[in-house]
Each structure stands twice: as structure tokens, then as C-alpha cells.
Image (cartoon, rainbow, N blue to C red; front, side, top):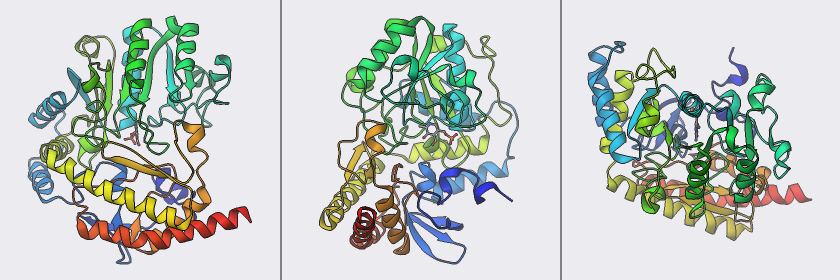
Length: 427
Ligand SMILES: Cc1ncc(COP(=O)(O)O)c(C=O)c1O
């Protein structure tokens, strides 16, 4: 009926084996499947559920909004208030709402091309920006010459022409960035990067790296697009930019948002410099539109979520993450499993290999067999981790002592299972 039984590939268990659980309901930090089993949720809908599931105030606001009608196709108050909240917290002067992170990055790239009159896009291997044609491209061989880095499509169905407009470089490789701009600078519309990569596991940008990217783009008249779909309002109250740009004194030209700002509904956004955003239709010539863009239910959920995402929420996330990170490291060390725990702000992930992990080549060393065993042992013990070794582990404000303790209790057994799987792998 549905290809692979899922409506987004990350939900499948292909990488770890077995069958995904069908979830019937969720509350706070807990998921309940159709058989009545309960799990501590470390996926949190892949990021959005910052406050936990079924937060009473979000539900009340959403229910009240639903009662007023579900979509009008006209401007509404909640979308203006959400835009104000996003502008207040981040570097952007203006925002346009869309319905998914993919739409946000797709539209940001079009706007960058429209603004610069250029076609090429630079991205980094291991960064995911949604399933936009030109952004699925990945390098044929990571550290190849620039010509080789002009990439091949990452999936059937992407025209070679779309992939050919994308230059894929190794993350953190300043020399490769310099060389790409030196060779193609007058044709590069933008460089897009995850503000802090979270889609190869968490790889925090080294201090000054995003500033270097912003400065390089500026030098060549290209736009710097910071993808905060995952990090926005999650890595910190002000996203990854709050951890680097705001401190170092630079800002991206365009930023994409999603996940947390939709409060569990399909809402995303892109925003940026006033002069660039002014080029968007109808104030400018770059066309972009959406029947359900800025939907009143979705923007109400997002607005309520952001208003409730106080500094105390981030302190709580930080404390819960710190406890779990230390316990994972202890359990894996005690079992003799190679691992590296990496984080940026309140976001973290665990690589099943020695660190540091600085780019996709490093991340690819992770022992996926050990992770699969670890994942299933955690699941059997009632903890639902991402079914992939390359994902961020997401927490929420509802991960209280009881939920965190359930994770801690499951870790030693899962670490031993990972160790046993690792030994089988090398036997
Ligand atoms: C950094 C980043 N950009 C873009 C996207 C695409 O967002 P969506 O799945 O809402 O299309 C994702 C999704 O995981 C993401 O993590």
C-alpha cells in the first residue's frame, strides 16, 4: 500500500532490522504503540516536539484555532505574531512561511539564484536539506579535485543537470571552500550549510567556521544560507546562530527554519536580509507561493510552542542531555564499545566509533552493526531511539527524572549488546 510501509524513509527500520512500531498516542516524553507498549521517546518527531507531546497549552491553543476554521487563504494574526517571534529571536529581518523544511530550502535557493543571477550551489557532504533535487547530490569521492566534486545525482530521478549545479565539499574543509570559490566564484549563487550538521549525527562547527563561510560568500558576492530547520529554536533559544553568529558578530544572508517552529504541524519558513527578501513575489519578481502556507492552525501551534520555549526549557534540556550523554559514554566505555558523543547546544548524538567526527567521512566510520544491536536492546527496554546510527537524539522539556531514569536503566544492557555485536562483526 505504502512503499516500504512508511511515509518518510527515516521511519523505516531498514538500517537496524525489524519493523517500526505503530504509534497510537503520545504524551509528554512517552509514546504508546498500537499494542499498548510504552516507550521513552528520543525521536520527538525528528525534532519538533520541544515541549513534549500533547502539551496542554499547545493543545488548548490549537483546539481554539480549529474551532475558528482550519484555513482561510488570507493573511491572519497568528502568522504575523509567529513572524515577529522568529524575527525577535534570530538574525532575520523578514520571513515567509511554507509547509516543510524542504520547501524552505528550495525557496531559499531560488531566491539566492534570483538575487545573484547565478546558478551554482555549494553544499557539504553529509548535510541534509530536504529532498530538493539539487540538494540531494553528494560528492562522488569526498576529497576529489573540484571537477570531481561537481557532483552526481544522489538518487535516481534527479536530472544530471540539477546535480551538476551543485558543488559538494567536505565539511570543515576551508581549503576546499577557498578552491571552489576561486574556481567558480562568479557562478556561485549561494553556499548552503546546516547551521550545525545534525543529519550525519551532530558535528558542531568548529569556532569561526560558519563565520569563515559567511565571509567567503560575501567576498564573492554569493549568499550564505544557514539551514536551521533542525537547530532552530532547539540547539538554543536562538538556534545555532545564537551560539556562534550572535556572539561573533555576523549574520547569514538567508536562514531556513522548520521543525520546532511548527509545534508538530507542517510549518516551516525561510527568512533573511530585508533587501534579499524584498525580491520575493509579490513585492519582487522571484515567485514563491503555497495554498496552506502560514496555515492558522500550524502557526498557532508554532507560536504557542515558541512562547512556551523559555530559557528554563533550554536549561532543562541541557541538564537532561548532560545526564544522558554522560551515562551513554559510561555504559559504552564499561562495555568496551568505541564511541564519541558530540553536541551543539542542547542537541547531541552518539557515534559508534572513535572521534573526533569532523565530517561525513569520519561519521561513516560508525559501527552500524553495533548501533543496530544497541538500538534494539534499548527498544526492548522501552526506549525509542532513531533507527539510524547517523541521527540526532532528541529530548523535550517533558523528559523528566522518570523518563531520563528509564533511559539510564536501559543503557548498560544495550551497551553490552553493542559490544557483543561488534565482536561478532570482527570474528
Ligand atoms: C537541516 C534540515 N533541513 C531541511 C530538512 C527538511 O525538512 P522537511 O523534512 O520538513 O522537509 C530537514 C529535515 O530533517 C533538516 O534536518
